[in-house]
Image (tube, rainbow, N blue to C red; front, side, top):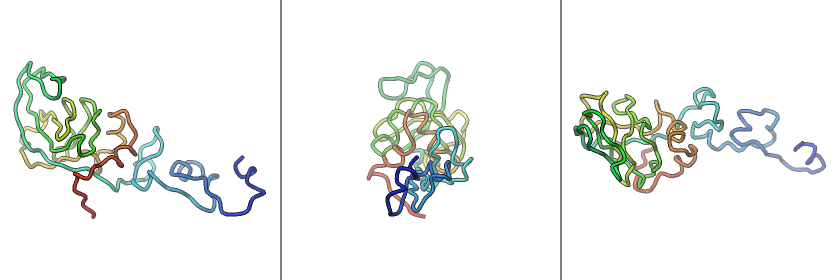
Amino acid sequence: MFNQTIAQFSGERSIANSAGILGWTEALSDWVRPGIMLYGVSPFAEQTAAQLGLKPVMSLHSQLIAVKDITIGESIGYSGRWVCEKTTRYGVVAIGYGDGYPRYAKTGTPVLVNGQRVPLIGRVSMDMITVDLGSQPHAKPGDPVILWGNGLAVEEIAAWSDTIPYTLLCGITQRVQIIEQ
């Protein structure tokens, strides 16, 4: 339809964004406009970046700044939303919505601590998040944390936060140190 509509006009043509480039070869013309795929992110809700051969080019890292134990009935986070059901070891990560981490990330959102998945517990605060370290008995302050990147797709974090990856990638604030590699 597009080609029929513009057949009478001269000039270069472009209608293919990331989804068009990857999903509809008939949409390829003189120019393409890759966007989200340049970050290594899938433009399709039903396909992952890995399935499309895309690799993440941006990751968000932090570290544990505290490790503590909490007992049954104690709570964590704004409004005490998360209440401990069994004695739990938890960690505090130096990242929050003031840095661009999604404020609406739900309890259970995965985070990598020492390369292992652990769930977010409690609400995201301005400067920190808390994670369940029950599976990480040797975790300690200073240990590395990956919020998204290699091993943890930004698409997954976006899904847990009821948003799209593009919002997360563009939402990093000036507080975050950018390291180019």
